[in-house]
Length: 334
Image (tube, rainbow, N blue to C red; front, side, top):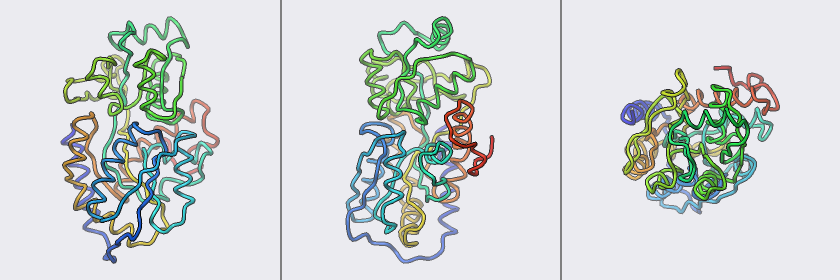
């Protein structure tokens, strides 16, 4: 599965690189601020720091990762958007979040107004605290049905990958749960390990270490695909318990607002094609953490991310969380 994702994304990235217009090479003369709109240690923070280190090698300039959590990632993202369009302030995160802020009324900027540089795709996992009685997904669903609203589920907040995953499960099965929110995926996972909550549905990359350490018991991927985590083994898909369940890939990466000098964008796209498409450090991160190595940039990145953006926006709309219907801001119903 990871090989298939990689080959598809690589082909798209190479095709993009081949079609890029000639542009002057950008040489940054001062550090670049890269805003992570979530807490340190979570999925966005992890992959952003790995990617930033690889970009620094090519750009020859420091990239400063700044954590600015709050309002489901929209605060830090808004700060990146409102910064001077000089190419020295970028954002990071999940493309599906970026595409949903407008419908939620959090940031009036559509995903197409950003240059996307995606690196990995992440899959959410239903992880039970080691002290809970749940040994498989069916037991958890039975408990949620028997005690509606009592099972505590930790996520990084509304629109986060974990929240979207649990909402998709709730919609597919009718179960009700108690939503407990945190400032990022890592705090949500820690809450489940400590027993403050029963379950977390955050991403595999945020749970991998605790899964390997047997402090979280993975019940299923929130997907129709199994997932291999190095040092643990295979986590079976939730579609084995909920037939027909599907979830689009949740792409993560770096976002540069449109309006910056064209040489900035051309340079980063060139780096994505030549240095990120086969990057061993990012590949190793994906294998170790249970992510899918899937580098892609530009229009191809937006096309790859759109299924998750659509699914996310319309799921939130169906549960009454959006301010406007997604189709009014250019997000067609899937």
